[in-house]
Each structure stands twice: as C-alpha cells, then as structure tokens.
Length: 98
View (tube, rainbow, N blue to C red):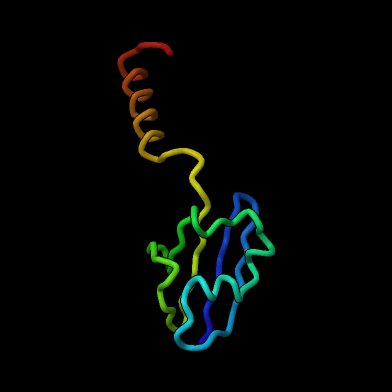
C-alpha cells in the first residue's frame, strides 16, 4: 500500500511517500518513514497525529493512500487569540485607546 507521511514547520514542509504492508499502524509507518531522524524534536507522546486533518490514535491501522499528518504544538491558543482580537475590535469601535 502507498501512503504519505507529512510534517510541516513554519518555513519547511516534508512529505515522504512510503510503501507499507497491510495491517501497518500509524505509529509503525511513522517509524518506517524515518521522519523521526529528520526531525528529532517530534515527540509522538505529546504531539497529535491525524489522517487527512482528522485526529487519530497511533494504533490506527492504515489504508491505501492515507496521508499521515504529524501536528506541531500550537504556539498560541486560537480561542484566546480570537477573544483578544474581538476585545480590541470592541475598543476601537467605542473610540477607546489601548
């Protein structure tokens, strides 16, 4: 089966194509891809993984043409950022300066 393993940093993305056998799990495929030697900072215990944007566990058995994605930790919580932006917008509309 052919699959892809993807990891993206802010300024660099790596996509590795891999041929695996049926029954291979997500974790096994990541190790087979050698992406952990390219990016030693990847911590599969702390970082989430997914297939085509959907979070899945490391024991998920893969299917033909799956694209494994390894997600980096968020720098900022998107909910907090949106709240801060909304608060700034309210202040600007009301004429208050920050």
